[in-house]
View 1 (cartoon, one colour):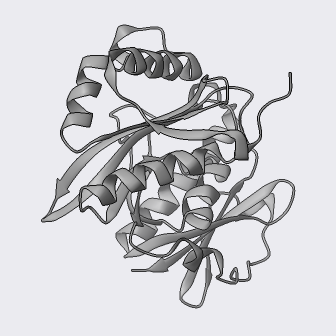
View 2 (tube, helix red, strand yellow):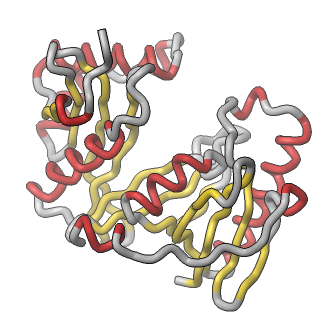
View 3 (cartoon, helix red, strand yellow):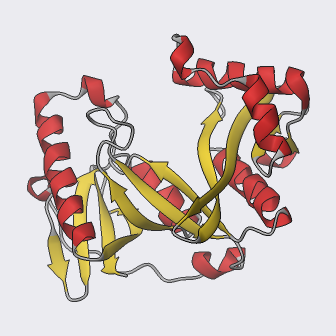
Length: 254
């Protein structure tokens, strides 16, 4: 049987213990988590949803849950926002716009509670995620958090998405021209006027624990470059592919 198209998929707000159990099962299956310490508590999910949080899903026409995301209200430095903790997509359903559907479903929940900003964290070494967050959605990478989860390799960018902005506003922008890059420049800073660029491998898919030494070295250089640029007041604006092997981040001063 063929995989349903995006038009046949449906976003839903998840409610009740049965749906929360279904979502937590999908979460553990997609990430391959075995230990209880990595599980999502369905009872906690109910509390999150009852108090301004989100638990959204994407279902096929047959009712199968193939995507799930959840988040909760956040408050930092006087700013209120919706924090998207995690989003997962069933294997075999990648590339059908499900990630976008989940984010916009969370956007609807946040706006329904009067919240006009959303934040989430992602690993910037995965160029595909960077392009989706920055270029497809139009979020801005505002903070760099080395070892965000307290473990080596858990370096994260925290992005902020303006939920009140029209969807088309970001998509209509003309991409900025990219500098000439090579594999030798991976992880290092290139400067061009007011912009700074950091090239990275464009096809990284392995977990940080499985990096070969050469890739680990590139990531170390990349982390150092981001640390320097964010300390100097830069923010992430874009991540685009420049050739079959390389993607490049564009940063500008806030």
